[in-house]
Structures are given as structure tokens and as C-alpha cells.
Image 1 (cartoon, rainbow, N blue to C red):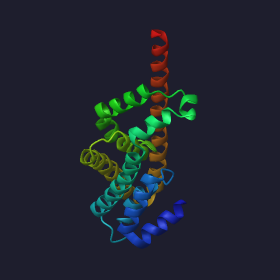
Image 2 (image 1 turned 180 degrees about the vertical axis):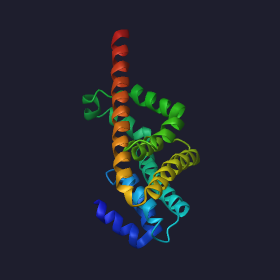
Image 3 (image 1 turned 120 degrees about the horizontal axis):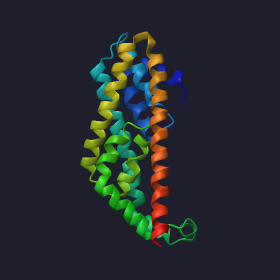
Image 4 (image 1 turned 60 degrees about the vertical axis):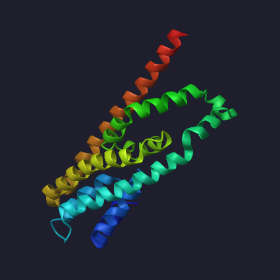
Length: 205
């Protein structure tokens, strides 16, 4: 979905378009929430849309999309992953039951941090819902943390678009660049963490 289509839908259908587009953005990360939110902020100056109405609509859309992915994670389940480990593909990938158990324990111990802060990272803010469902993280806690994180994210971008006015595209460019930098840093941290984990594991063995 291109930027012009997103802008047209929000301009014509207002809050309903915001809810649906943000919900889709959560399920299909390539749809850029930065475009949706900053343009919405600009529209609060020229249409009947209000800042808080737009924030609430965007937050509702985020939670709907997150619940869908959480449900997908529950369908996958740890039990199914365990069965996959014992398949030929699982053995080729060198997956172990202990790896699944360790990942589940990590999410249950630190999942709250991952769910909340993940809402500020591109792609991660969508995909974090799947492991939450797989780990059977408590649904209402998941919804609460997701709501808080997305509420902050939506408030910042919509207000930025509103304050920038006709220059909202300049603000959009800044947010897109900042988001990519954050994603890069998170990716590097994850890769280094995995590398350190396996290095220590091999050193002990």
C-alpha cells in the first residue's frame, strides 16, 4: 500500500480508516505507521479529526492488530514447536527442547519489558505479539502493556504531525530515519547476544 493511498483513505474515512490502517500495520509491518500517524496529525488542522480522537483510534487499531498476532502465537504453541524440534527439519536446524524452554522462560521473566519497549521499534512492535502468544503471556497484561506503549508512540507522532502542519513530511522523514537507526541497533544487539551465548556455550563444553 503506497503513501498516497494511505493519505486518501484517512482523508475520506477519518477515524475508521485510522483504526483499520493501524490494525493492518500491526499485522503487516511493511505498512508504515509513521506515515499514517504524522499525516493524521496534519489532518487534525484541516478536518474534523481531533488529536485525542485520532490517538484513541490509532491505539484501538494497534491493540486489535496485536491481539490477532497474539492469537496466532497461541495457535503455534510451545507444544507444536516441541514436536517440530523432533522432525528432520528441526534436527537440521539444530533446535533443542532446552532452547525452546529457555526462550519461554526468558519471555515469562522479561516479557513485560520486551512487549512495552518493543512498541517503539519498527517491525518488532508488530512481531513481538507472536512470541507473547506462544509463551502464553497473560492476555490482559499483554493488552495493558501494549496499550501503554502504543499510546505513547501514537501520541508522539500524531502531535508531531499536528505541530509540523504543512511540513509534516519533513517530520516523517526524521522519524523514518530515527526508526531505522533504532532497528539497526536492536538487530546488532540481538546478533551480538546470540553470538556471545553460543561462544560461552562452546567454551563450557
